[in-house]
Amino acid sequence: MLQIENLTKAFGQNKAVDTANIVVDKPAMIGIIGRSGAGKSTLLRMLNRLTDATSGAIMFDGQDVTQLRGSAKRNWQSQCAMIFQQFNLVPRMDVVSNVLHGTLNRRSTFTTMFNLYPTEDIHRAIEILDRLGIAEHAPKRAEALSGGQQQRVAIARALMQDPKIILADEPIASLDPMNAQVVMQSLRDIHEQDGRMVIANLHTLDTARRYCDRVIGMHAGRIVFDGTPDQLTTGAARDIYGADETFSEAATSTQIETLNEEVAKLADIAESV
Amino acid sequence: MAELSTSAIQTDYMAQVRQKRIMNTILLVVFIALMLGGFATANDRNAGGFWNGLPMLLDFPADVISEAYSRAELLPGYFVKYFPSLIETINIAAASTLLGGLLGLVMSLLVTRGLAPVPWLIGPLRRVLDVLRAVPEIVIALVLIFLLGGGPVPAMIAIALHTVGALGKLFSEVNENASLKPVEGLESVGAGWTQRMWLGVIPQVAPNYLSYGLLRFEINIRASAILGFVGAGGIGYDLRNTMSWGQGKFDEAAAIFLLLFFTIVVVDQSSSYLRNRLTHGSAKGEIHA
Image (cartoon, rainbow over all chains, first blue to last red; front, side, top):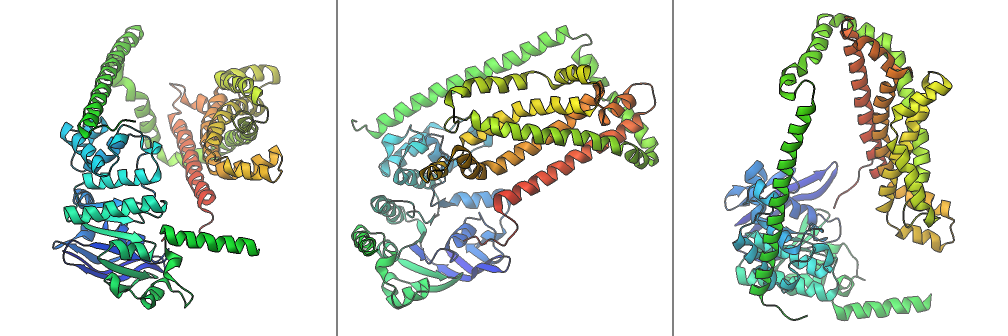
């Protein structure tokens, strides 16, 4: 279904992504983990064609996505929705309009400029918002919502695209643990109920373990791990994060219990100073 | 808040959408009616008539271009001949932009809500800026030329005054968008007002100041060229002499237009270069994740 072949992105001398090879046969929930700067975002951005690859190919259903131009490229982008860390909504427009932006590729520039969306689309947008539990915020401006709610609006925009793939670039990195759980569960539900492929960049190991069928680890632009969460041993995790023996999974965790431990630790440090 | 059903939300939202669409349609109709009505009124008052004059619109540029083209070999000579007056014009513009910009900077900090040290002065000082913008610089220049005699200094003062008004307003709008958090941070360490402004606000807004300042520089080059028409010297004086009809000097006028055009291009290019340097720091290989 999706084949990434020797995909490379170089910024000058630096290789952000170095000859990445990934094969996905059927829709799955895939988590990509690694340190900041490991090339996770660049990989996702190349899939969506927000960033152009330096070399290599992305084959989807027999078509090389990296070669698409103009409207063919925009059509691919509409099938391959993107969710961002900072939500990337239009803050001054209402929630439903933001969700309707998911249909921009299908509609003419003129009708969208004057907000002339078909009634069915508006109804569907509100149904999607209802599915994500935020329908009552429909007429509010996007900027009036909390971070977790805004991220769900962004997911609604992605669903409105009716995409084959959903790419999520650090979807929970700006959220508190409760909202992070809601957002990750929504992504998991979308994968299970609609059978869409979801690829998410994640900072933390435990989120990847908990929600993903498959984990890909990146270190300094290279793929250093590709397997099921069970195969992800502490040794493999140390390779991914480039850490030594003092590394523990809790250090990368955002769950509430472990957070409490961390807070306790910080309090200890504060006392000892 | 009572839980609303999805269908109720849909109906409510559709009602809102319909209302907005009706408003938009009405506004569009009013806009078109005003445009058509206004055009008809203006055209009736016109001495010549818009449609009759339209074909002749290109006569003057055509004359200039054909004369310049037929004597193209003389153009480099004209560039050399008029270069000193161009320098004078640019000098007037640069001095007035610098003076006006510095004064505008101070004024902008005094009229920005949240930054101003004396809040009740905001209103009166804003009116001062309004006055400076409202009086055409050509009027100030004519008065000053009458008092001080012709030359570049009256033009410089006139343009600088207008620049204070324009940049003071634009800078204060930039200041409004600056984050107050660094200012609060500096206040917490006991910094004075000038220190807070200089170290907390200016670093945030400097790139925008620079681009507005350089845009104003471009405008001022044109303004100082125009003031040359009324005796303030510089390239405008030469342009008036060569542009008058029937003197056969259109080739020289074309050379002056080209000089002005190149000046604007140079200012524009250096403006974007400087702005990039200021926003992103000097060109070092930055790594994007």
